[in-house]
Length: 287
Image 1 (cartoon, rainbow, N blue to C red):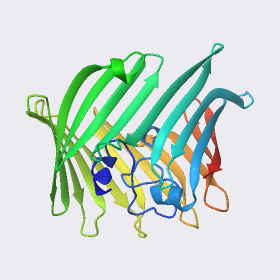
Image 2: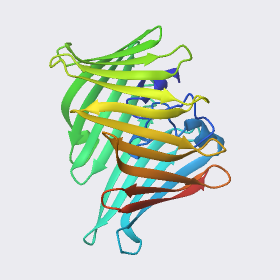
Image 3: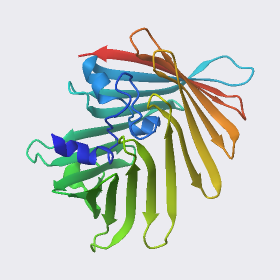
Image 4: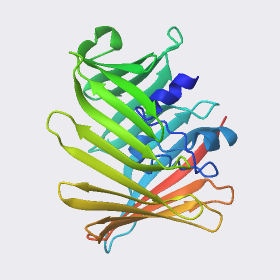
């Protein structure tokens, strides 16, 4: 199943190099839960079938209350995320987003992403042909049998010493974007550069690590604003705090609580400007 790794970053199903002992995967320095940053080996080793995350909020001078949002992640026995569902109660109705990630068993070199929500069905198919991945997008109303074609593009992967390049080609076969990952002598990701080849716009993300090889700082500049994420670990080596700053000003901080087995029990995020607190409570189902 080596081909899955070649498109894992595309579907955000990461396998970490330096955080195998914890539930969160910091393989690319991201803890955005829209990007499924769960450590595949941790999920598989602990035989996790389902993770449910219920959201609560506390505003200034108010009690903690449920927001009505629940996110459910489903995993295979190998630790791959196969589906994610998001539910939110809005004005008496339930809005649901269901996403699935999976292998086409008839075409072993194809990976499919499918999203279904109030607007209909959206799918992406990833077809692997050597070093090239063809990505095609479709949209439908009631089902994939009625879907309409949107677009296709190709991702050409080239691996060099200490460097990975992914060039994106449009439907005419012309390159319009390039992503370059630079690694140090120990295989740690040092910099990710994304270039728009037509407009010449460029964005660089820098990565720094502590003495134990754990990600400590991720930084980038966006539209003149310097963004920085700082990562801290507890005595057992688990990530327990993430702090985000813009131009050295604290914007929010996130604390991650674990039980004795290393499972996340809650993530608490505080907005420094509004003092609003978001609490995400985790529960689990085992295979």
